[in-house]
Image 1 (cartoon, helix red, strand yellow):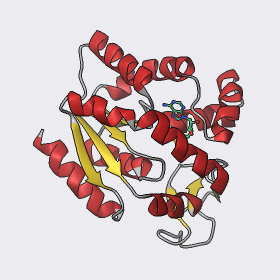
Image 2: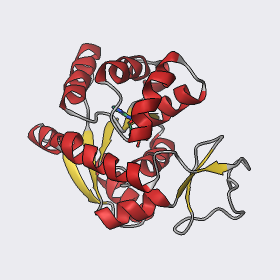
Image 3: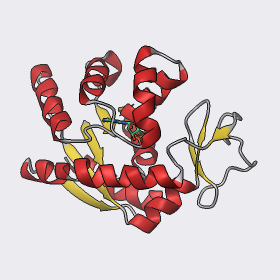
Length: 215
Ligand code: AMP
């Protein structure tokens, strides 16, 4: 099964993708996670990407597309994948279609996680992420049992540098300018499903699974 998760930052794409990948044994490919790992490891790509990420801008297509290519065709993606955070604009969506076509595969479903601005800002500003395993928490909605410590692996939690108010606003602006156009792109391909993502994660995943399993 090949799934794309679309939606503004804070819609819950990462949370849903992690859960779906476990339930459906699919590879979770998050371009944001891959880029953060590159930044953490201070690679050439990471150094180049960091300036864009800190401002909430998109990293140039060329870098992200080539980074994705090897992941899509890697063995771990044999059983299928969930794309989280890619594509982010029309050139990326077209590049993805080309890559998949060359590999003889196609996307089954695109889920558009629809979330409203107040919910997005509340979720992003309170989000905390595990430094080790990447588990996602929220200071109010899903607090860890011990403050700032991951329930799953015991490592420290941190706040993403782009989860501060000014950057959140720019990420939303970039989303509306670049990513929202993908809704029409996938609607025309008859692959798009709207999901109300203002709700808690458990309700959202139920809707996604119903559709994914029916396909
Ligand atoms: P995310 O974790 O998906 O919110 O992504 C965090 C940041 O990584 C974004 O604000 C961008 O700077 C960068 N990024 C992630 N995915 C992409 C992509 N597909 N194209 C360009 N930049 C990306």
